[in-house]
Structure formats: structure tokens, C-alpha cells
Image (cartoon, rainbow, N blue to C red; front, side, top):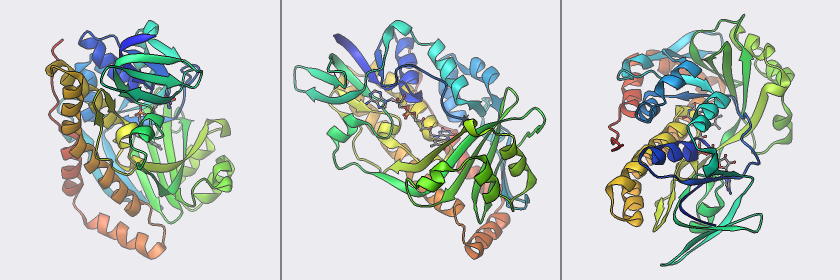
Length: 383
Ligand SMILES: Cc1cc2nc3c(=O)[nH]c(=O)nc-3n(C[C@H](O)[C@H](O)[C@H](O)COP(=O)(O)OP(=O)(O)OC[C@H]3O[C@@H](n4cnc5c(N)ncnc54)[C@H](O)[C@@H]3O)c2cc1C
């Protein structure tokens, strides 16, 4: 098989890029390893920077209906007292920050892509590139020739590992459970994170009478006991925390709880390799502490489509993309890593000092940091 543009991976990065390319008249072929697109994951926050991209791609209104707008974000101590807050609404530039269930986001993105351009159940294993040809080989023994390869396979991308064998994923030191609970009776309206001595707990209303939550706790990587924790063990862990957390957990059935260790990709110094480019988590996976991993993948999609439109050749476009994206994405990866270390302090004395420092810091300081990320100049596609 031969195609002009090949995208590997049908996550948020791959699907958003397929849509952005479609808007500029390029019908890319997208190959996804999973046999089919099944509803996966819990919820996700899409900040104004990501919503600005979706506005340009014509998906803003659909996402607004499918999700829930985020106003004030609160940080609480474990008794429920607010120690810091920021009003995300201030930085929206006329666009709303939303929280949405991942299956809903995927549904909206898939509706915009052409099913004929998507191949599922095929996992890339390696590539071969020389001056005349570029071929990707798959686990089913087949291969696809292409002129340009966009790698959106997530943090464990085999193509990135072939390009950069020295690239390293880093375990953050904390593990994470996520879930969706019915919000019909809970009626939680605020987005919050609670920082305490048994770990962190985030609660995010995502619309459609659902609330998304995440729980992060320090521990060894890939720990069999932590991996097996469900509602009962989480309720015991957060027994001394405020009531909202216990109510949310009590309203989450075990089969709605997913677990994974939190890791990122140690910043790499190349995204572009002639006619191959890395985007999204394949290029700059970050810890979720700033809620920016997917938002950066979404920015990538627009910047890449614009670079392809503006440059004469694919290598020039991919190099242009790398130049525009490196500093911003590295900055977020590093800032998020540091923030995670602070938010995960579980030693009672250190956690007490941290909470006091946050209480004494004016909301404007937090808001200034948020504004730098949310308010970004993005290229405009010529559609
Ligand atoms: C706990 C947690 C909470 C988060 N919360 C937020 C948030 O609120 N806001 C936010 O912006 N971000 C958040 N993120 C980050 C966000 O989930 C990721 O940054 C985002 O999903 C990355 O998208 P991606 O498409 O690059 O990679 P992925 O989502 O990993 O998608 C990669 C796709 O490629 C496929 N694939 C993998 N290998 C191959 C292969 N060899 N060949 C073909 N296909 C392949 C996979 O099946 C998958 O479909 C969070 C992350 C975590 C862990």
C-alpha cells in the first residue's frame, strides 16, 4: 500500500491532526493499533488554548455541548478548606475551558474523520527511510509506503525508540486511579484538587450528570498491590479526607475505576527527522499536573498543519514545526514535573508548610502562571 501522509496512532493527537489536515485538503491515512475505537478512559480537561484550536477546526460548539465549562479551580487541604484558587474564566479569551468524558471527546473527533481513511488493528514496529522511500512495517507482517510520516503513538512509540534509542520515560514516583461517578445526586459544581498526607484527589464535573475524579498516591512503580486497589481500598486510603471525596468514591462502581502509573518522557531535542515527525505524547509526554498533555497535542495538530501549508517541502515543514513547538512543550513538561513533586508531598510537616505557603500566595500569582499557558498565539489555517 502507498499513501501520501501516514499518521500512526488514533489518540487525541492523531485524530486532531487528521482533522486539521483535512481542513487544508489533505486526506491522511491513519493507522491505529487497537482493533477498534472503544470508549476508554475517564475524563479530561481541555483548556482555552486547546479550545482555540478546536474553534478554528469547527468543533468548538460540539465540544461545548458534549462537555462542561470549568470556572473556578480550587485547591483544598484534606479537611476541605480552600488553600488556593484561581478563576480560569479570566483567561478564556471568549472561549470556555471545558471538562469532558474521554469517550465523548473521541466520539466528536471520530465523527469528523473519514472512516475510509482509518485502518485499525495494525501496530507499527519499525520504519525504513532513505532519500527515495519511507516505509513503515507493522506487527501483522504488512508495510505501508508514504511520503510523510506523522508519529502520534503515545509515550511508548516504537518509531521514536528507533529514531532516538536513548530517549527515556521517567516514573514520577506516584501512581494514579481514575473514575467516573454519577453526579445526579452529588451535584458537585466546582473543580477541585485536595492535597493531603495520603495523596491527592481531584474532582471535575464533566457534564451529562457525571463527575470525573483522579487519585494520585506516592508508591513504587508497577506495584501489584496498588494496581489492584478499587473502591474499598481507596475509601480506606482517603478515610480522613473531606466528605465529597468519600461520596464520589462510594458512587463509583469498581468497573469504572482505571489505574496507571504516572510517567513522562524526559525532554528530547528533536521532533523532526526528514520526512518523519513526532507529535503529542510520542514527542513530549508530560505528567498530568497541569492538565496540558492533550492540550499540547491539540496545539501540535494545528501548528503542524500550518507548517505543511506554509513550507515548500515536507522536511522544511517538519523542521519548522519542531522549531515552533520545542520550547513551549519542554517548558510544560518541566513545570508539570516540579508541580507534581510539590502536590505529592505526603510528609505531614512538609505538606503543612506547603499548604501554608499556598494559603499565603495571592490567587493572582497562580492566575498569572495559568494565563501564560492558556493565552497563546496560534497560526491561522488557510482553508
Ligand atoms: C491521569 C491522567 C490525566 C490526564 N489529564 C489530562 C487533562 O486533564 N488534560 C490534558 O490536556 N491532558 C491530560 N492528560 C494527558 C493526555 O491524556 C495525553 O497527553 C494525551 O492523551 C496524549 O494523546 P496522544 O494522542 O499523543 O497519545 P495517546 O493518547 O497515548 O494515543 C496514542 C494512540 O496510538 C495508538 N498506538 C500506540 N502504539 C501504536 C503503534 N505502535 N502503532 C499504531 N498505533 C499505536 C494507541 O492505541 C493510542 O490510540 C492526562 C494523562 C493522565 C495519565
